[in-house]
Length: 294
Image (cartoon, rainbow, N blue to C red; front, side, top):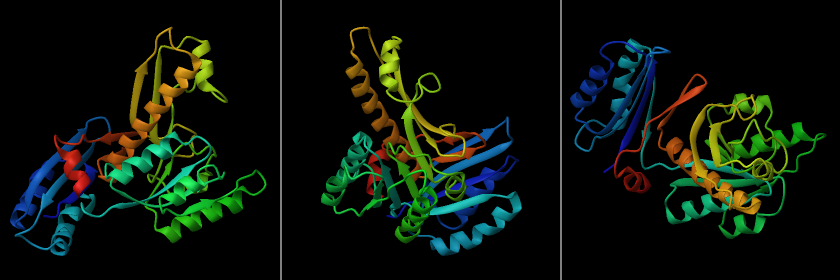
């Protein structure tokens, strides 16, 4: 049975939910799961619902018929086939913990994506990627060739059909142009010490200052470095008994988990950009298994 996902964003007003659910009922659809949020600060309404139409109208008929409701409420609405895997391009530099974690989750089916390639400015993980039968692209980036390197990157994106770029500890800053072209489709991960501990060896800096919490933040990439809308965060508690090496090890674990959860939310269309913030609908009980199966 195919699950379809409908996402809706519009100005908040009376009757939206009734219009959507009533329309789907008329088309013979069954609503499996539904989440909604009315932001009183911005006056925006967000909704995500999952439905089936095994005995009702075709998805083409549903999409076509729904246009009248979109127009009536000024909606930005999208229908997605739950069985289709999003095409994802991974990017990495010399820290491979997030890349290896994502490859493992992808291999066992815990992260149902189509990895269309891995881009790196180094060769450290070429063999790992190729051994997974995934295309590896080396794109060297310097101050002198950055425009040419980014042009090649966008060529890879277009050729592969990538719908999402994941910066799995990719240590090059993307240009404003790419950030605008791929707005809402690039996810980055970084430690949550910012802005306190910038530059090299942030975990060592945190250790020297006796920090007791290590965290990680996954966010959409914007022209403002490391300040895009946050999708997912987490922390781990540290004690005085832990060493600087422990800080690094624990931090890498947190980063890997946070990035995977952010990607999981994005590919299942549970994340809505709301100005400088996000609305992230939680996965319903048991949905991780069902989402993995499509």
